[in-house]
Length: 153
Image 1 (cartoon, rainbow, N blue to C red):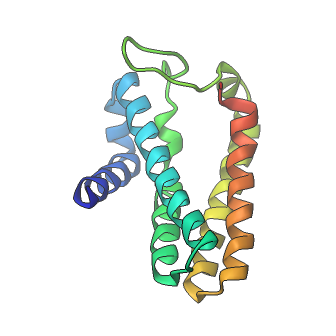
Image 2 (cartoon, rainbow, N blue to C red; image 1 turned 45 degrees about the vertical axis):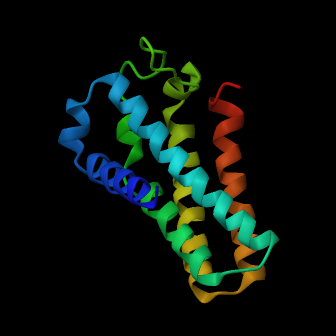
């Protein structure tokens, strides 16, 4: 399981960073890859939350925060290309069409998310549970900012 998740993360980062490769992806592939990235970040958010609510493990939290920051900084915006605003066959998306009509707002939300992810990684590296909890809350709020506006239920 860990091996598969690590492979997925590496593949996501590699694809997202290679903008010409992103341009060559079919819309359904872009949707699948971006969903995998968000799922991977969500899994790591769950690990951080569990640690903050239980026995705090600074090393595990720092590793999870670094994984989130890595995906956040990978250029996932390239995976919101033309044709990715709707379901394609069996590939479903919850992105609202409004996302593609408000790119300035979306860009600011994305920058805020990346900043929050980077801050969490920096704070978590210091091992202070209280500061990490605050930074984790900020990251959660950054996620919600997009979900509330641009993600269908």
